[in-house]
Length: 192
Image (tube, rainbow, N blue to C red; front, side, top):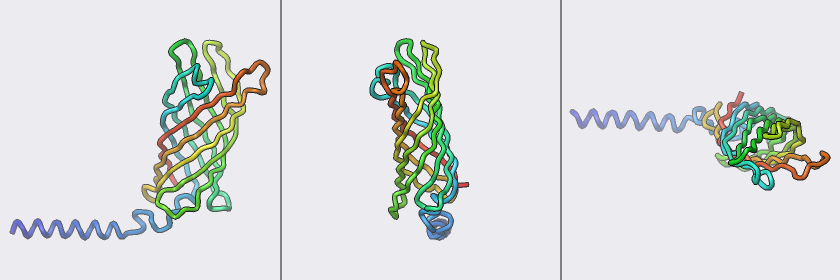
C-alpha cells in the first residue's frame, strides 16, 4: 500500500509538471518578442566604475537607477528614459556625486533565442557635485550600452546591463578632462 501511494503521488506530480511545462501561456514562450513590444518600467543595481582620469580621483562604488521604455512603430526599437544616482568616494578628500538623466534608443537584435541582446545609445545631462570644491553643475553626457535579458514570465524580465557614460566637459573654459564611467548592473523590469 505504501509503495502504491508513493507511485501515485509521483505520477500525479509528473503529470502536473508535464502540463505546466507544456503550457505556453505560463512560461511566455508563445512569442519570445512579445515581452519586448510592450512599454517597460524597471530598476537596476550594481557596480559603477570611473575610468581614465576620473578613476585616478575617485574609487569604484555601488549605484542604481530606474528607467522607462516606450514602443516605436518598429518592433525592434524602443525609446527609453533613464536616471540613476552614483556617489563616488576616495581614500582622500575627493567625492563625486552624479545624477545622469538621459534619453536613449534601444535596438533589439533580431535573433530567435530565449535571451535577448539589446544595444542602446543616447544623450542627456548629468548633474555633478564635487567635493571638496563644493562645485555643482550640469554637464552634457553621451552613453552607449549593451543589455542581455530574458523573460521570467509574461510580466517580469531579468537582465544584465553594461553602460558607458561619457561626460563632455571640454567645452568649459579651464576644463582639463572629460569624465568616463562604466556602469554594470542587474536589472529587474516589468511589462506594463
